[in-house]
Image 1 (cartoon, rainbow, N blue to C red):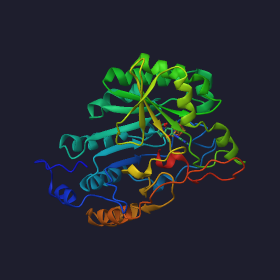
Image 2: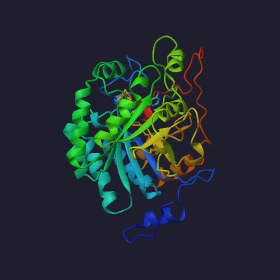
Image 3: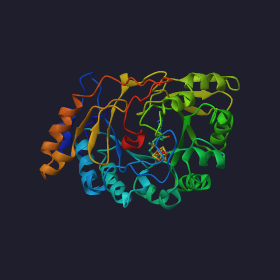
Length: 354
Ligand code: SAM
Ligand code: SF4
């Protein structure tokens, strides 16, 4: 836990330091993932249906409201904020919000502002992100091949992502590549992706595909079943070429890490399906409409837009946040099964942002 005495702390933070956000299972909540929009310029096949119905624009929180929400969570002891989406960089004026969050970095009431992005807008935003205090970002990329990338994203242009990654590195941002492991889709690129990340000085994390949201008009369960590639199997494949050592570090996120002895490269594994990581979960998620989700893999949620709009003071909002944290479930129970006609969680990943 990070609740350090700090001469820059304001009164609210000192109050939070005495009573941090702790759920009924004793897990401190220090990490907020904020989906600033559910819109995106891509339509990755495992994430979204082709004809998505997005949240009504009139229900979306303004950037000022999102800023207020973040400030409340920071006041309650949150130390890390990740912006996500949808694609966070397609939200108009999102930079304003990131700059506001930068103030909390300066006052040391927040340790990190970061984002997960598909990388298509980074040429435009990389320098400004650095200026605002962002130091690390995650870029999602599942293939190095232009045609395959296009197929996975339905219409994306990989060159934009490559240019974005380069711009980010030039601006001084540390970049981690997030790759969803997709059986028979990017399986044959495993060694190429690993070698490319090493050559480009990029960190790398693999993620197991999760059954969130329906993907096609007909049942999508078999598609997810077909695509699911357990990271235990991916690791075995890696071991056919590299000597792998487990690295006993934990980040603020859910990844486990290994190191390739030959190159010294560190690789993360996020395994919600084959090994859930709920016992150390320190995070909650908020949608762009102000709905607080207490677990990525469960439907338990609380509306924070109502208390946010009911009062100009944050007291009611903070009270509702505290009550909500007491409803945080113990864990998720994702299952991907052949012939199962519904995803485990009905909402799509773009609503809460992973
Ligand atoms: N648009 C941004 C991006 O793609 O990085 C941020 C939002 S995206 C929903 C966040 C992460 O979730 C991405 O790394 C994406 O690959 C991952 N993701 C989306 N749907 C998923 C699913 N069904 N299972 C596992 N990961 C998923
Ligand atoms: Fe968009 Fe990210 Fe979902 Fe792909 S994974 S469709 S880039 S939100």
